[in-house]
Length: 371
Image (cartoon, rainbow, N blue to C red; front, side):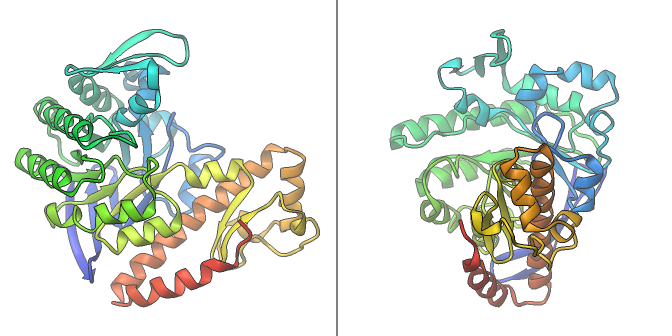
């Protein structure tokens, strides 16, 4: 069998579940720290695990470029290479193709691109994307898609989505079924309900182990994103995990859980850590602000993470202002732990049948930050 998924409870549209993989289970809703190039930036694998993270994300595009999927395979696969024993999901590279702009050319065969590292010309086809993820030993392989950019007219969104659906069929044909490993398809279609419905129907007709919603958080705004999520999850099989790619801020995650999403990833926790921003139960904090310069309080005393409890805001402010690398490490550690604590609270609230009440309390608490 492929990856297994059991839906263990619901509260409204919010869902509790468990994803079973060859490298262990994942309780959902879950947030996956992003380890783009086989590292969650500024953190060791042990630090990531200590936050409560169950699954991490790697990126096929970056790993194919450097060090190479074949080299990783020779070195025992991505789990051994990066010393992460738990489950790994790999993004196929569709988003990177969009973000490369003029360096990438999308055609029916796949994406031809010029390496941002050394200028080498390479091609990523649906078959090569699946093969590379097999070599990486990813527990969840993502189908290659064209991440529809924003803004785009409806005709352009339709053409992009339908190309992704043709690629999805090729990915399904190329994927090697193994116990504890799965392939997810990606719903595209921009902000157009009918295109999203067409995409969901095409993917469920092909048949995947899980379904992602892509092409959001690319500039359309939270309201438009939530409009899409008001309908798309219900068009997907209830007995398969639903993954919202590249999202996002805590409020985005909470709103998406309320609409039936199970899995999330985003670079925000560690990117914020490198830019002096901390996410806390009272809202985001900017550690550059002078008001923190003589504050002896910990970053967030309600957290178990050492970075959250054992270092003062004054010290973190000093590290940031001095451009000491420890500042980025401590803030990234705290932020990653906060996101995991957020998901743990969400899971508990769904289990207790009080998710709507918890959400109101959470949104009320988030007003105390300074960003």
